[in-house]
Length: 261
Length: 284
Ligand SMILES: Nc1ncnc2c1ncn2[C@@H]1O[C@H](COP(=O)(O)OP(=O)(O)OP(=O)(O)O)[C@@H](O)[C@H]1O
Ligand SMILES: [Mg+2]
Image 1 (cartoon, rainbow over the protein chains, first blue to last red):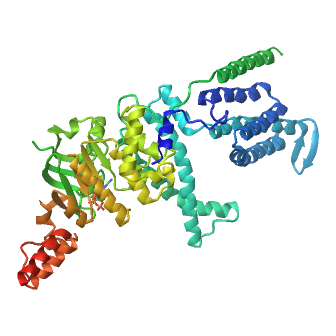
Image 2: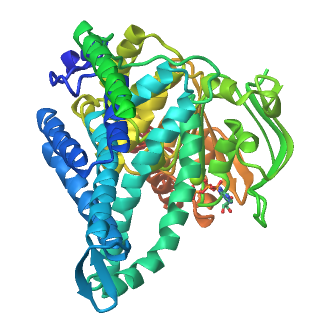
Image 3: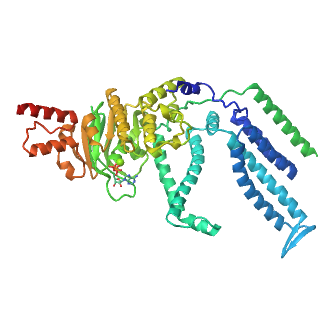
């Protein structure tokens, strides 16, 4: 029996990485700031700086790979799409390039750059938060803030079931492939391969959900008392408090300055 | 007073065309282990759902007759009271893992968190159950990545740790190999010694013969027969109805057909051995 592990729950479980060990609410606070800055500034250069800053944070938090994989996939897709749409269709005076009936203008490119980096920056805040915050710390926090166990469970397990759905669809696609159904190739072929699995996928998920609800009830989820916690978070260290206060004051100062300018 | 009492209970799942239970009357006494056997779709799981109150608290459908737990009608029990009174280990190990805990240790402690047990006691009780179920090697693993058999043992531990007086256990060994099965039965036996009342659905009749106080045979939503293991599990006619009986009982029947002396049909190995040794001496 690994008593050391069992008794480790008596203390807050720290990773010794100061970003990861930060209180989930502190992190939320800081990321909300990063979330609002691009909205107030409206400059693609700021957006790019913030995006680069996210990569740095992920690096320091030791989650660079995970963050990058998720973020690039998203950033490349959504960012490019938004940029292209804006660049192609926003009218303007300064023509850069003429392509058949489409006019690409300087205004269109600027607006595309601005809008796509803004969306990518905002989503970066959310993705970064989900990567540097452990689900159970978040659950603990929202329960401490008064959310019921059932609510925090539903939130967490929805995230889990998104992962499950992804894995299940992989399993089903593999078996489709084994039966000789084309699942690779162009988008049309892929969609054609995917449609027949949606039924079983969602039906399966729903019937699992019913069973799971009962199974969790057997674990006393419906108790009308305040639950306790096996894991707890440390109380806010002084340094963290100081950072938060400084960041919030700086942020408010910044916003006031932008409004005046 | 009987502990759990069913009076002319019939139940039909929503949208189902047949009755899953049909006019069932039985009373369960405190501190006994009831072995519940029967062919597939016989109504065993439905009985479990009923006794735990998932019917009618969760499953709608049509319920007739009365189910009394400690003399109080199941409809009058609050659902959360039942979750502290009656533990339920489900047939399907996959739906029983919460999916939100990172280690098996935390998964097992989840029920205690919900019961509001304080941290130190929670850790001690979890350690105890981990040792009991020999899960030491699993405690740091992610519960979402376990095999079926491992999940089943973790699910078992997650309920045992809550220390209920009544346990409803639906095929706890369906995913287990023989040695893990034997271990689980060892534990069920210990739970019985702790005076728990246990309803155990199990196809492995050898184990029912060994441990049960009473046996109930379910067939088409009804209790087809009930009685002591010695009475029920020695009956050859169960075989014709799709229910197996212990192989030593079959052996006993065959020996009797060959006119060998048999006081009674054995249902466990030790009984069989006793009979055979006695027979051997008579020949001397
Ligand atoms: N959730 C449900 N909804 C509708 N009908 C159900 C449900 N669960 C079981 N039934 C039906 O009720 C009847 C009894 O099933 P039950 O699951 O109680 O049998 P069982 O003895 O546990 O079988 P098994 O050995 O396969 O576990 C069956 O006809 C079954 O189809
Ligand atoms: Mg069943």
